[in-house]
Image 1 (cartoon, one colour):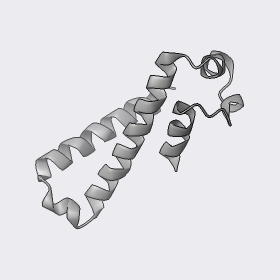
Image 2 (image 1 turned 120 degrees about the vertical axis):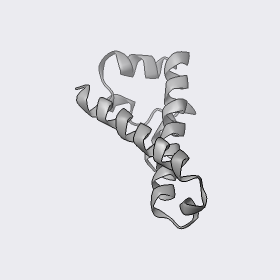
Image 3 (image 1 turned 60 degrees about the horizontal axis):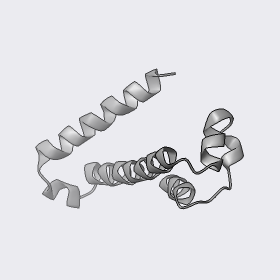
Image 4 (image 1 turned 45 degrees about the horizontal axis):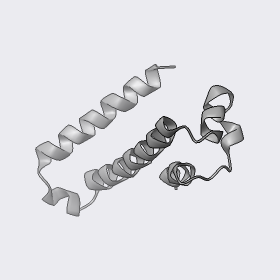
Length: 87
């Protein structure tokens, strides 16, 4: 559901643009190509994060290489920590 909003906006939907505010709202309404690309990439990263979370807690995730799953989990934790501290 969280990624769905990104895909909706990337596909041209406008509902909720007024919640963005400022220059970001203007770019969204103008369908700025860089912003559209960023929204699609963000949506794909959100889906990837959901799949990673399921991988870390599910039985089928145990069949994947542990080092790969651990590295992806650490990378996600690092990125989210930077994002949280950016405010």
